Image (cartoon, rainbow, N blue to C red):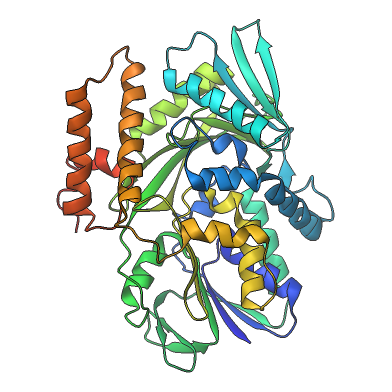
Length: 454
């Protein structure tokens, strides 16, 4: 069995590792694009945070509900991967847990509601969670001991080292142009026009996947139109031996993590990672985004009380593709052709779960019982035109605007809500060509960012 894996991020290498664990009768070729400066895997803050991805906006989404239901399952897979790679769980999974903190007198209504949503989700799904009242700074917090962080660079290096030790696995530092069905299997076409034949293909190349899919004319799938989720983060470190970084131990973060991507703080070796200020864009960006970086600096001052004048800072930016209805493409597009694309922030968190089940499908082994349920919401052939998809996106957008107004002590009247609904309808009909709409796309239309996007 000859298998191509297109993409050498955390998902691609995890799938290759799982396949190699399950079978010796395979040959694997891993294609790695030489331009990985914008890789989401390499820019990741690497929180394994299933429960705290919840916020008030996305709490009721069936995909969010399903992931909460699989929380313990995924944590177990991370522990298994850590033992497999390092013979313990501490080398890979870092930190004492995650603390979600919120001021009791916060004027940010979305943060307060999101805090309550995380707490109620933890209770409903039996997630280990401890509630604390902090009288010393008039705040409240939730402590989630199972939510750790991962040094994504260490993980990538370890996976690459392991896979390079196998004789039946090879890496190709070549860019893939398209994948075509030649009736005998799959032909992977490289940018130098060289082609290689495979029995199976797994496409998980992040923001490069859209171009590969749309170039592959023999794949019976509608043209994929997606957007770049762009995350900005800061890496704080000291170049002076007498300036020491504070020890924070646990991950710290704001409650509004799911739909609005609040700020989080992760301690790494000799540095602190602060992220992520996120938005979506129809085109790749260049350079750092000053307003996002300023937001992160303010978060350092408000949350950690660090004097950053004596510290060095590196700005990190990574792409995280977003599909039109915010549900990723996960599954078999055609016979023996698999795709994992558009996972946004969830790619690293769920990499062991995806790799466990994709590998078993390829090898005709039994995947987890929950795998079929998840694919109902992530299958490439879902109906983007369904009234439910459009209504959900529109309602999510209106809800987010209601609470955005509350943050400024305002409210939306019926005329405001009707106008927002009309804008959502225009975006769906004129700009997304009947393929569903993600709520943030409506903001892009409103501010004139996608008028010329085809």
